Image: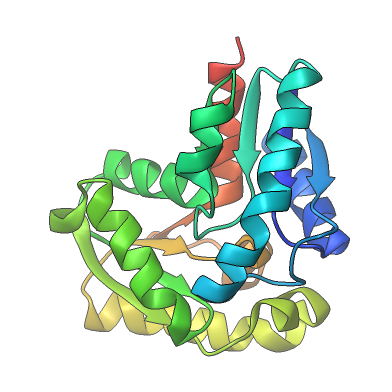
Length: 211
């Protein structure tokens, strides 16, 4: 059993991540942290979500999870979760960065608000991928707006991706929010850039680790 834990309380986002994993051929259970904040934007939200997240990690382990995915691109609580888990724990940000490096070349990240930029930069540096990072960019769209109005917010995200390609001179762009799982459909297929979604990346890695 693979369990994806959404550290925020927005159940629609959990369902979107489960559906994204299913399209990648990975079946998993999606659990929502109903005691967490509605969205995780910045360090205060991150700190608030950790206690209920860890309670769900323990519950998943007790239920026999083979792999656990933390469905927040900030990789909130990842270190603490690993310390108490009896199975591998993967963060969707961490998974996306590894996939980006494996794809070759340097990459940029397009996230939501500027408050998330330093958190993601710190995570990338801690992973040892500083030399592979071109830039972490904010598109200015709040997390919940991505979920509530995917069609209306997609142009801002797509526009930032296009700026990353030109200004950062990259061909790999990581989608820096779980709420961006729909963006590849709006961006369309092109050889100019590879878009890497953390949910898909984590699901695929979790499937391998669960064997």
